Image (cartoon, rainbow, N blue to C red):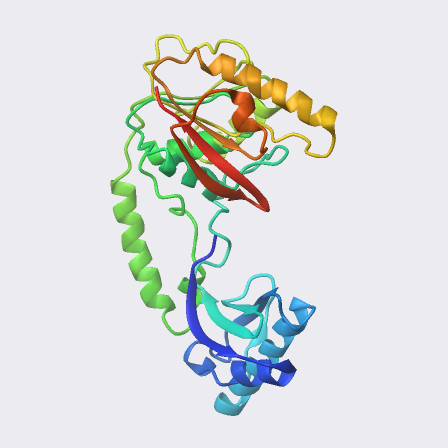
Length: 323
């Protein structure tokens, strides 16, 4: 999600400990009086209750050190800083780093119309890598929603770097921004030359017209509209695959309600019917991301593999089913 450049780690106690540890860092090597900065803090089991307070103490330490060493301090710009400082306080262990990327890496820039509970783009890419999808075979998602798995599959099939058209925060650092711009420009050129046209079908199905409209908009925003086919279909019925040769199926079916017996009963029935439907897919490698503990038994197919992933706060399992 983020790419961090560590600066320091120390045990700290109290507000003064936070301030002293942050002030001991040579900020003049990373900032100039003309640059802007912002501090973002996260806490885990800390003596401090508010991340904003921790961020404020670190910000004060940075400003005071810069004023003492260079005679003036950089300005704080929370929305679009030149340098983003990431602070993590776990119990009494303070870790301070610079954010090389800036915006979180899952923000690829193509999600212009999300649907309910979409997968993060980086999670979608991780599922595809776990399934060993490399673009050398057909790919389908029978419950595609807003199209995240389809777009990530198309990026892999096209050998396109997901961050090709974004800028990175390091390009604005006063210490090395010019060098970073030059190196990243070379990398972008190399990545562009390495792109290819997807050679196999990438197809998404959904029974919801609104979901398919969102998927079309997102695929177009990713400049992959021609690489992805979208069709209306119900995953519980035979999929209109035509003459496609077997390949990889990955899907993220609804997790459903875990709070009421009626809700779980309905989800179990849905998973059972889904298993019956996918039995028809002879020769396909099938992978299902399940966030409902009832899925495995209800699906009634024996998985060849299982791997834990976290979809936000939800512990999920990616079940793999061999042909």
